[in-house]
Length: 242
Image (cartoon, rainbow, N blue to C red; front, side, top):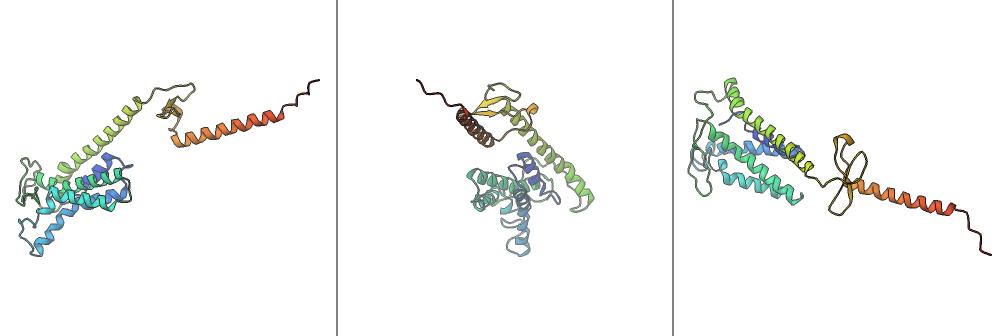
């Protein structure tokens, strides 16, 4: 088992997906879910099942089915959020939970996981177990060094790859925006309703909120109407015709 870094995939996923979508509360919940599968060791201590039984260590809690159940429970607890946020919560928590047996399965020591529970309670090993932990103590600096090298570095690359993909996607959406119209130092684009909106431009300062832009246009239009009325009232009265 990974002794120190079972929580790390939750942090890497949160960074890769984006802090704006994965808040700190959901990140903490993901870290807890990533450690949760090892709670099955209590079932062995309480003699509920044998060490390698279906409900023993690396049993049903180290399965894809258990990860999906945790994700579904997270979605139920997020009922007050929009459907899109509930789906994101479910997927994120399920991935965090599934990361635990994945890390255990990649280590070249220890028993295998009951991946297919509840369809199958038997243990199945991954065909590729590249993390060398044979002869490494369960605790201590040597263990931490091996986990940082074989687990921490790939997760760091995953987090940075996610940030890079989000940046590329943002640039792509910006380059595929509606062609700008109008003149001025900051261009305007037309939205789906035919309303001119400012296009984010590094030379024009921070992007403008579309709702705030519409409100500002309404205020400007009302001021123009009021100014025209005031000018009309100030005109001298025309003499009556003879």
